Image (tube, rainbow, N blue to C red; front, side, top):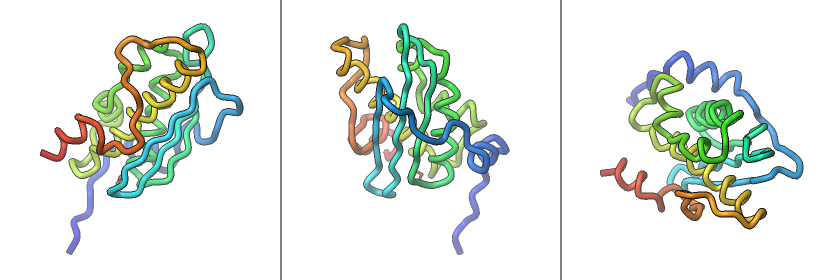
Length: 151
Ligand code: FES
C-alpha cells in the first residue's frame, strides 16, 4: 500500500489557497522549467522596476508541493532586489513552508530554477549580467542540486 505523505499546515495552506497565481502581461522576465521525470512544469513571471521585483505570478502544472512552492517562492521574491531574489534557494522556500517530505524536495527546486530562468530572461532582454546567475535549465534534472538530492 502506498504511504500517505505528511504535509505541514503551511504547505496545505499554499496548496489550497495559492498566492499570485496567473500571469503578468509584458513581464520583465518569464521563466519556465520542468522535470521530465514527474512531468511537472512551472512558469514564473516577474515584474521588475529599478532592480526590484515589484510583482511575481506563476502558473504551475504539477503536484500540490509544486503549487505550494511556487506560491511561496512568489511571496519571497516580491519586494526583493534582483540580487536578493537570486538568493532565494529551494531551501529557503522549503523552510518558509515548514519543510517538505523528502520525496517532494525536488518540487522546491523547480521553484528556485523557475525564478532563475525568469531572472535570466530579464537580464537577456535588458542586456545586463546578474552576478552569480547561471544559464537556465529546461529540466531540473540538469542541475547539480538535483544530482545531489538523488544520491
Ligand atoms: Fe515533481 Fe512535484 S512531483 S514537481
